[in-house]
Length: 477
Ligand code: BES
Ligand code: MN
Ligand code: ZN
Image 1 (cartoon, helix red, strand yellow):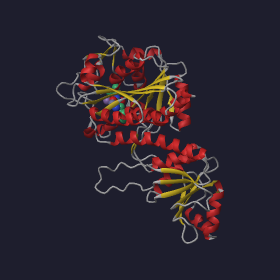
Image 2 (spheres, protein in one colour):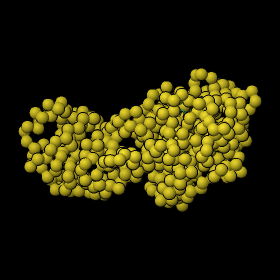
Image 3 (cartoon, protein in one colour):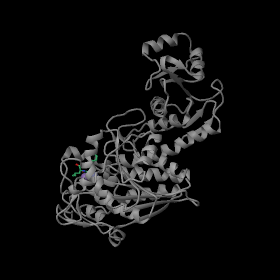
């Protein structure tokens, strides 16, 4: 784990590298000016050659040579308006360029977003490579840093830890993360963060009437689990329930997916990963709140025992669902978990799920669909996501669309018609939260990145962790 410390002025800090910021039109920050003056007059011409003007996203790495006590100085462009996202991206790019340095001094104004970007940019999933090259940075020195700056950077480190944990869970191949294994990891990291952990095994799921989870699990050779992670502060300012879709692998079941559509389906437990990651951070920050994280975990496979189109499942809260497409499985396991969440009578339920391709079609790869049942739940999520720097967009839940999931034999069916698929999925979920304020994030797009970008690397993004933590912080006051 990286160590964060307060350093003195830029001419006295000791580190291998130095990161400084540059505004629009090459406006050098004081620390950048200090370094530039020592480097010499050639630097301006060199910046010209690089076309480096201080725009957000630009980073010029310049050797310190004999004139500076740093091997490399990273001049990071932050433009006119160095907001959180600009600083996170700068941190991500610097973090990647500085991966081989053991220590880095940073003079960047707000250390929170920069540190977060740096730690996320230095994330690697290389456990399956014969020659892994993990980043070596283990010391971060905050130039002119005081206790507040260290606390801000430590907060970023805690959040980054949750995001990195979520990314690890998502990037792991499905064969290596059956529900039992994810439950084991959740127990281990949950207890390390001071959480109380309850794991429901197959017998408990049967006794508890979790027909949605059992229905989806019926076609798999691996057993399902439902994990409850509890954070219970002594004087709680509120009670929040988080629910995450944990489909370890989504083959589609008997309504099997085409090969191409299956390639990334180890990602289908990203909601559960986000909840486990967020619960870890909430425990570590010890927020004055009561929070429960629920993760229904199973594979969706077409084995001989698999549920069939036309089968009817009875969900935990007693309602029945006719399964017409076994590939619409996320809503089946979430229905059970949301029912249980509502039984706990929290102030707010939030679920996070890679639920529908339709959401990805509507909003693209970078924005999550946000749904909710009123009482300010959507507004709370929107505010938290904004503060955390994750992109969400509010979507409608029109009551008349409910008719699209009317079944001829059960209380509802698990698919709508061809259009509005993200909405009909959300309308089904709504049936299982009762009167509890509820918000739903469809993260089918942003859960996974198809290329490296700033502080996001190809693969699992850990999307949702930052928003859920920010929401819990908002509730904790
Ligand atoms: N896990 C998928 C949704 C998904 C698709 C997530 C692409 C990420 C990328 C979900 O279980 C699914 O298969 N949904 C179906 C629903 C349909 C059968 C009603 C879909 O979106 O096609
Ligand atoms: Mn599916
Ligand atoms: Zn799925």
